Length: 230
Image 1 (tube, rainbow, N blue to C red):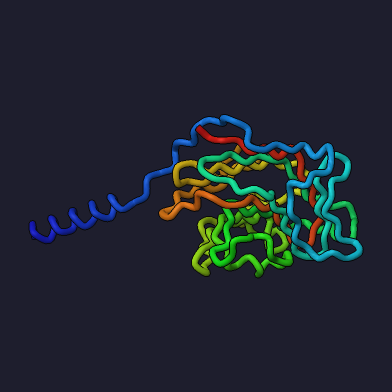
Image 2: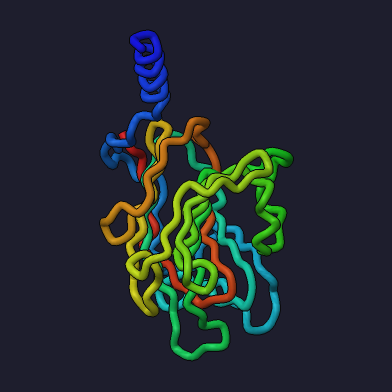
């Protein structure tokens, strides 16, 4: 009996030791790496979407407007690396427009293409991005029924966390303040100051691109700021 008990204690201790450390330290905001208040058009972005009548990705009325009947990704055209804090304001507009649909406030970050030197080779269709390495959050996906964090890589789209309750789904015409942090192997998603997802990655993605993503909706983006975390 004593031998069996000792084995059990050792086994449980080994399992506990294998648990990843919690993400508790997030540094402090430092130098500003990029900022855009969308007061004027900019050539700092690459937009992937179907160019046809009715689809618009442009700066309008002091905000970036993404108004599309299918998939769209707006990439910042410069890679990020190391510890960074990404912040922006975003709204899903529902006012009776042809593309107005309460769904898919999505973001890609630390995105890389393992097979190509250039990331910007896609049409905007969601499945085009399956082979990337990146983090992805989809707030109000699946017609505003799910909010999910995924890690893409090696052909897999690992589900890291999920919500289905109303408190973590979208409200129309509301300005959300989104914050995404990457710090020492951890990434975090905050919405209006509340932590929604925190993830310590055993194989951290430490370099890549930021993409503002949606599918069939009208959304606006404002006050994008990226800072170094120190």
